[in-house]
Image 1 (cartoon, helix red, strand yellow):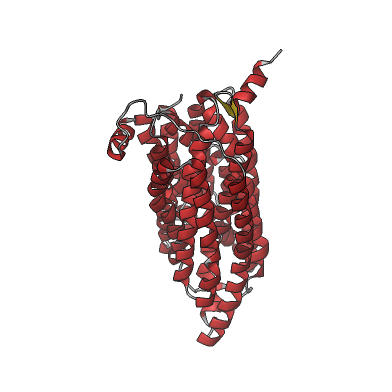
Image 2 (cartoon, rainbow, N blue to C red; image 1 turned 180 degrees about the vertical axis):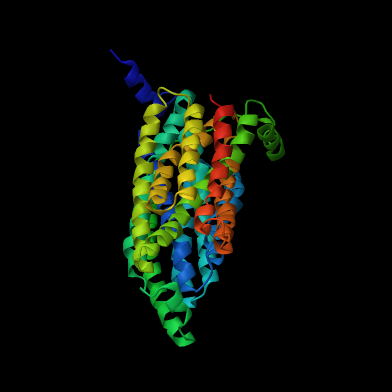
Length: 438
């Protein structure tokens, strides 16, 4: 006799009698790969600032290029998927991702910051294709009632890739860059600076070259594995782009979800990018050298990602008993309280609070995505594009936080005060969870 739990497990990855277990596994690998890209990139804001002797604000151009690629390519990706298939979207995404990574090699040879920004932009055009394709495809791999839970399960493998990215950034980039701190680099003459820059860029590029090999291998696998087609019928509705956009705009849970996703991604990237700056200030105040403080801060960042990963699996389990919207609002409220400790308490206690915020963020992206896209009966591809375009928050809000850090305000340490930015973002997320609890 089949138990209710067995039925629920089967429904999680099957649709209309078709099993999606193998496609689910293959597509979930993509979640890990874009997690890797995101979290090897966050510490690069600080790394590029040192390598090219730039301000923190200038360093955040890495995030502008990174999340700008997400924004610019999401709509073209949706139109591509509409015309072709989810599988074609994933293949295109992997190809662009690999191309962007390979462009790090000529960027290093040119020795300038701007070619790296171009490489990041192309790389994230590929990630935009992958996310625009993979997220809705996972939602459609089974029963609609289990869609948000299924997406949370797939997204649980995203932080595993993120952890790998952080470990690579810490052990193969940050720890191997020249130990000269920012002040020491500032007094080097042009010839010394150029030699140091080329040495550091060689260290930075090497892991990206190895990543290209992994991407090409997965691309070959995607071409060989059969990925079943899944499409939602338009149900006799006008299938034009403008008509679909009007339907999405009229859908309040979806429209509000795009706004919530913009602010959530902004909060996530600010917390994970500036944990390095926050920790470096704390540990240098204790007498640590700058490089040692940066490496220790990255270790805290890894602990934050482990917590994020564990809490995402916990969130999947909790959603069997609680409405996703209520969990979303509760986790956002906890994040707000913890950020109060980051801003007002500071020191190692503030650092622990900042690590704990990651546990609160664990279920936010897939839950907002599932609630928003779950309310869309048709126009799934275009709806997905809108939610991926909302990732632009990861480009805009870190720059705002960096400006607060560079302003050197007197009221509180500027790094502490800058976390007002993600705090405001979590207020928006909490309101969305309270308003859309189904």
